[in-house]
Length: 76
Image (cartoon, rainbow, N blue to C red; front, top):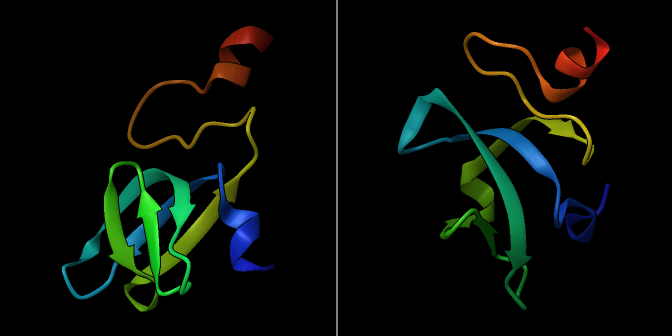
């Protein structure tokens, strides 16, 4: 997968040197022209520091903690 394919995708990720044990949820909104930085939500991160755990399509929503996803609620 190319870096450009991540734009507008929801992800679960680790910001390795800062929060290497905290899984975070975000949406990739922009990539720097030099392809060294990724903008996730409103924050810029170095590409080498981000460890992507899981990618989600637009209709899926990552589930952190308790509760049902949007698709699971509609199914009930």
